[in-house]
Length: 344
Image (tube, rainbow, N blue to C red; front, side, top):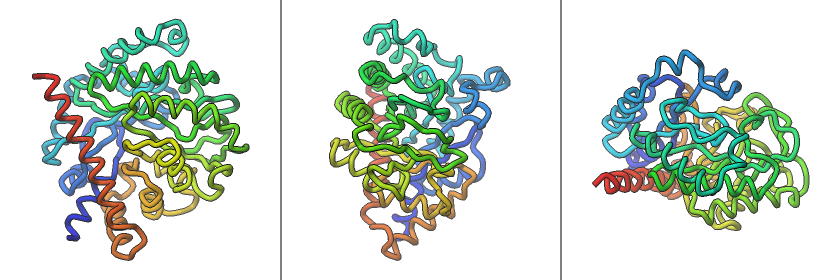
């Protein structure tokens, strides 16, 4: 039985790394039950909202194809290969896929045009082995938010919804899973959650426009949602959205979302809040997340062992872990089957 739990504990981890190569940590993770990787970017690229010239010069489509094949071979099952490919924000695949539009151009394009451009872009990404986008950003930003500066889609909920739903329809039609982020909507976030404890102040009423957009992307069929890194005192004053059963309860029970729930980066200061990465991972699972975004260098084996120990100690429900792992693996397999049938 413990081997089943260990396999499940690795299955709920999504390790991120910036170079297109699998180090020993990630190779071991994939052999032990891991089924997801995030091909990320450096902190400088993240802050600059652009991939470095050196990366653009060095990386080829073949690099992505090769790492996706190697990951699937090590895992022995279909694997989720994720990137940040935001609409007008961070675009990890740079010039390796067709450009959609700049943030300024989007407002002048019809929904149908945006959907088709996203389909074409995602279809190329799917050919590279990428099948999960941690995008679109659907936060309706109405005030100070340096964290989402030059990444979000504006302050008008109707327009944010229009753009986001077109993106979701286009990329998912191409066989790439879209992830709406960052629930429940960071309309003002004055601190950078990666390096400071961020809080979104204000009454629940101020979340109305954000929640309406999430309702619409869920109705459109988005397959994944990412809770954010900030604390929302109007819902839960003690935990970040990614570790809050109350916040995730709103997503799952009030909004009726039944898809994959992916935590934001658990290594972020705003999510850790002085706790260890292992305790934070367990808290996120217990709160209702299925897939935990972590750095590949954050101690994957230690996190997996702690998750199993939490089950044995009664801190984490056994079925909660098994159900989360099943959901991740099921989505990876279903997405692979869809891609194969589309090619036939």
